[in-house]
Amino acid sequence: MEERNKTLGEFIIENQNAFQYSSGELSRIINSIRLAAKVVNYKVNKAGLVDIIGAAGERNIQGEDQQKLDVYANEVFIQTLINREIVCGIASEENDDFITVEGSDKSHNNKYVVLMDPLDGSSNIDVNVSVGTIFSVYRRITPIGTPVTIEDFLQPGINQVAAGYVIYGTSTMIVYTTGHGVNGFTLNPAIGTFYLSHPNMQFSKDGPIYSINEGNYVHFPQGVKNYIKYCQTEEEDRPYTSRYIGSLVSDIHRNMIKGGIYIYPTSSKAPKGKLRLLYECNPMAFIVEQAGGKASDGFGRIMEIIPTELHQRVPFFCGSYNMVEKAEEFMLKAELSKY
Ligand code: P6P
Image 1 (cartoon, rainbow, N blue to C red):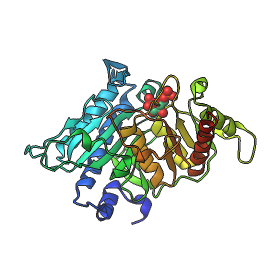
Image 2 (cartoon, rainbow, N blue to C red):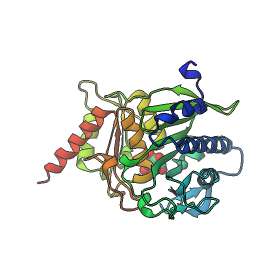
Image 3 (cartoon, helix red, strand yellow):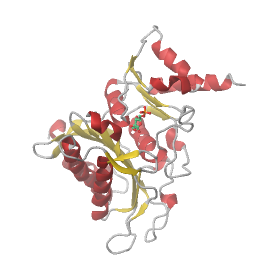
Image 4 (tube, rainbow, N blue to C red):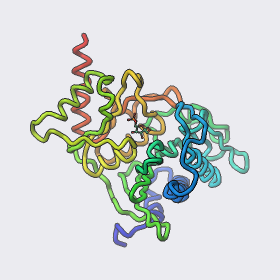
């Protein structure tokens, strides 16, 4: 079968044995994400038509207004995963604490935990800008048959067995990795099937784009300010183009295709950064590294950070390898100049 006509279902079956724990459970997790993505996609595309837009009136642990679609997407992904008897625990940006899934036989026998941001960039929904779902999968580290504990979720990103995102954009795509490269699948909404449209996605080592919210410039660390000035200097392949959608999945997806760097640094407004390590930065870092890119907190590899809390935030520099490396050079130089 020609690669590009392959469906996500066929791809999962063909690659199931490549996954080191190929008991089929990981395939069932990806299939569960696929189904939930189609359900959420339908609602996201109808958001402008029904009274589902606007804050649900509640605030999530991040202190952000919860959009009704956030709440809806969270419920769809959680319920779809629970119904398939695959995971022993779920953590979500929308839930203060993790969810223990004991299974219909109350055995806690499932081996995987899933962490997710069910609808990232939701503030863009009302202005019709693309949003995304981000997910991260680990094998539990506490004994099977016992209730999942926080240790199962506080694993470094290098332990991920799968990660991916759904982008609800001009077309809806699932992009994911199980540690054997990154592949993108585009939904044909007419028949509800995802087709392999972007086999073996790769970041170019350099790129023409830098993505950062320059409105926060005055609050940035000196190293970031210096790197922004470097991007804007007429020299070699610069100045770069500035592109910032304000939706993490969209900004990184674009950069993966065109080349570029995305930065959400610390600032006086966000002293630890804004993005969450466990269900935004680690899954995106796994994908970016599998596509030949680099993901850093400005000084070191994101996926080697040992998490200490479920919703912890970190600064995030990710994208084309050489661009992230250059940004780290500016961060180190600025740090050393303090002494
Ligand atoms: P700012 C969306 O809220 C999000 O978490 C990411 O998707 C996005 O990249 C970032 O925050 C945008 O934040 O502060 O630039 O609006």
